[in-house]
Every structure is written in structure tokens, then in C-alpha cells.
Amino acid sequence: MAGKPGMKGGGGARPGAGRKPQPKEEKLTIASSGAQSPLAFLLSVMNDNEVEDRLRIDAAKAAAAYVHTKPGEVGKKDERQDAAKKAATGKFGASAPPKLVINNR
Image (cartoon, rainbow, N blue to C red; front, side):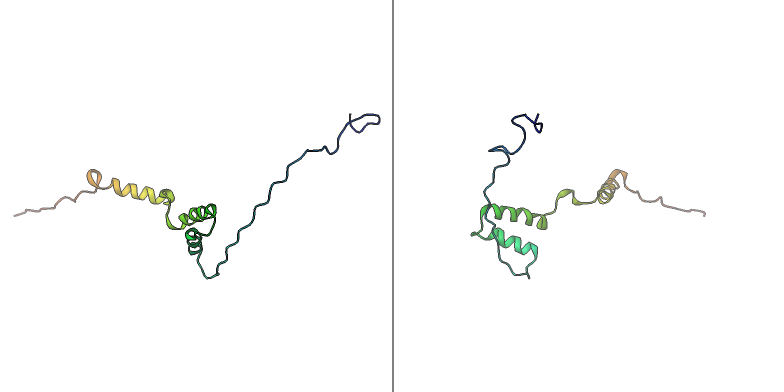
């Protein structure tokens, strides 16, 4: 066992152990004026041909959330209310009240 007198081997650093160092990526900075909206900035990055393709794709993904809404972003109450309006038309809709005709002559 390691740590006892007279025992060989044991703990400590071993050559080649541990995580290997990863190459560092270059950080790309894009200059912009602070007057732009986030959507305008993302669209300008997306349409810039000098920017790396991976970054352009990421900008397009992020801008899509501002432009296109998901089909399920309507609340549950709104969905139920719309379904109730659809069901209330046609066969199950409210009918006209009865006509009251009085002939007492």
C-alpha cells in the first residue's frame, strides 16, 4: 500500500496522466454601434459575407426567434378558448330563440 514505509510504487503524478491541453480558438470580435437593436445586429452578421459561416449560421438561428414565432407559443387558455369558439359554431352553436306570437283575438 502506498504511504507505508518500505512500500514501493504508490501515488503521485504519473507521466502522461491527466487532460491533454486543447488548442485555443481565436476569438472573433465584431464591431458594432450600440444604437442597433439586437435583431438588426444579428441580421447584419448573418448577411455579412466576410464573417465565418459557423457564426453566420448561429446568428441566423438566434434571429429566427425574433422574426418567427413557434406554433405552440400560444397559451393553453387561448388554445382552449379558440377550440371552444370553433365548437360553438355549426351544429352545436346557439340557435335563434323561439318566436313569441300571441293571437288573442
